Amino acid sequence: MVAELVAELLDVVHTDRVLDALAEVAAFDRYQASAGIEQAADVVAARAEAAGLSEVGIQRFRADGKAQWWTFEAPTSWTPTVARIAADGFEVDHARQPFALATHSAALTGKSLPVHRLGEDVRGSIVALDSVPSTFRELEQAGALGFVTDGPARRSGHRGRIELPADTSLAGFSLLPEEFAALRDRADVEVRLGPEASMPVVSGLLPGEGDGEIWLMAHLCHPRPGANDNASGVAALLGVAEALAGTRNELGIRFIWGPEFTGTAAVLHQAGKLPEAVLNLDMVGQDQLQCGAPFVVERPPDYLPPQLAAVAELVVAETFAQTAEHPGTWEAVEFAGFSDHALFADPVIGRPAVQFCHPADRFNHTAADSLDKVAPVEMLRSTAAAAVVARLAAGRYAGLDLAKVLERWHHGKNVAARRHRPDDGPKLVRKWDGPLNVRAMLAAAPPSTQDAVGALVAEDKANLSLIFNLGIRITGRRTGTELAEAAASARSRPVDPGTAAVLLSAFADSGWAEAV
Image (cartoon, rainbow, N blue to C red; front, side, top):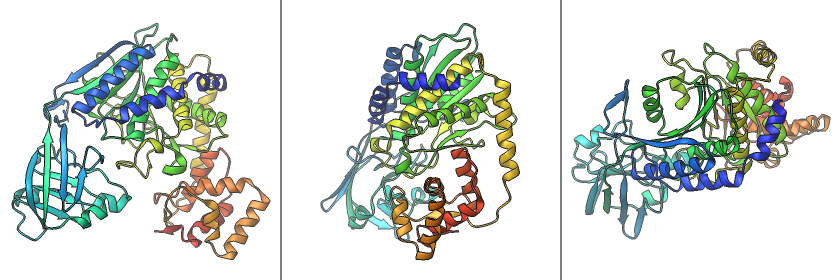
């Protein structure tokens, strides 16, 4: 049944329209309460209506920075309309260079402002910082007007996000190293802010036969382009709505697009009835070859019912199996809670929420999170899998042998637990740039390592795939044992520890990875 549903939805999803929606949303600076996110909300609402949802509407919440939903504060309205810094023929303009302006920067207009370093008298000046400080209080107290830094770019290689407190008196700019080096003693700075905006939350409904609902969510906020984070999730939900339009299930399916955490808190706070289950889509479009991380199904905490997680993992496994001619892997992970699904994990709410995501994206929170980093096949996978999970959950899993699904799911977890051995060894950190090139990595290894790997490949060509599956998981967060287990889970086949050790040693021997 699951195989048939996956095949049906893979065929029904219009990937071109999903990608078109993604591009349209990514064109806006979607700060949590801004003119840009209001415009993006209008686009999403129009597309949701066209997709066939009913009760489509936009709630616009007051954006005053005050606590409105339990302990959750509303965002503060902030829309930059002009943001430039220039000196000696050098100019950075936020309109042309996304992420140039630090979020929540204060308005500032000054001709030939002095540029100083820390330790000097910075009153009335722009301060050149080598890194982003943990707090900006000292700069404000010293009377600085603003700052520039290339700290984020030196870490990631791209212009990166800087966030200031909403009540800051500073204006900040995120520069590239060459721009930072070109800045001398004085600079012209102009930052203008637009009128106040609201915090919008878009919602729509596929009605059910009963009065219960499941919720599908994707956060709408992010500086532009934010293609994977999270224009991808926003567009995928629109694709789900179109794919499921006209279907009728026992439970209604409610679609929600709003600012991360704050939008969800607002919706939950006013909800008359909580959903029976939740699926959150956050960063689901990543091109795995470029961005270097698998598709992840994140489970709810183990004290919540496991049915949704078990079914979601079954569906995603089948989706990847049916698209196996394209590169990419997936894995299931335990609850981490870095997105909207976290709000449902608290026992006060206590609803099972599963997340689809690519949490380890090397371009995340930088200007390089652009349309070219999104893979059409990954958008197809995430949209189709989400549609199947939504349809099954909204039908209360009718037609599934849920007992057998749960039995297999628990057995898989138990096998993994028995197989795991505590490993106090080092974790591997990648040292290469760009997509993994196994051929080049092996060419950089010593002859003895090449021979050892060659013997394993000659024995089983599947070991070529295993090298890649191990390599893309080298993020600095896993030991060798953990990398082998993750690859085994993603490939749904066991990995011989000795084989994995030889293959992983090739990354270290070649200098492409470092043990830390």
